Image 1 (cartoon, rainbow, N blue to C red):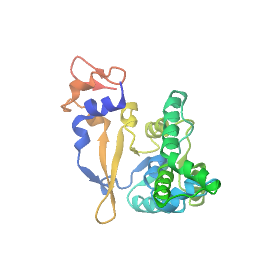
Image 2: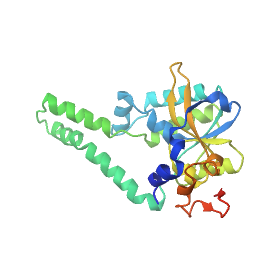
Image 3: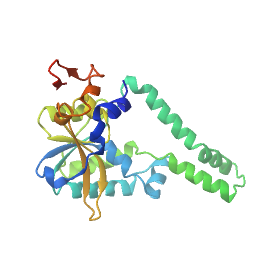
Image 4: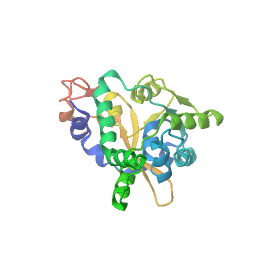
Length: 247
């Protein structure tokens, strides 16, 4: 079973649910997969240059973007952040593929960079290709994580670390009653047992953010028209004789 299959079959009509205003959850606490915010808001040229420099330096716009979205969302809900840890052993292949993709994307940049060090002439077109190549290599670094955590500590913002990826920590915080739900773009959370997941974040014309809501209770309800498809995944869902679903 893959998470792609899970989203296509098990979640079915939930994928097209309406966006929900954050005022619906006013006063509630949500655990945030911080890596989602960090990857989403690392988009400015200066940040891409910062994270691809050698040595790298903190991405200034990324930190400001995180601070801005925190201030925006905190008007309605309390945010509890979770940092990723190491990639688990079974994700070793995935990690290597991502690294190889970054190297492939950065091939033009690395080639022209080496030519420049040898004082070789570089055409305008080659320079443009190299610049685009370098931008595609960007990703948050350990320095960015440290800068964001420093801001959280200084402002007494609740946050947690993970031994491996954030998924299990997010779900455990919800199970322990520390938070009322999870904010993430990772479909694994529903499959792993999350009760309430806010995802598909978008911004309204007034600057406020909105989300789509996925609730496990609705997913397992007999009213879910995709219920029969859920039974294809016995490792995650048990289908009883009465047609009631339970995880």
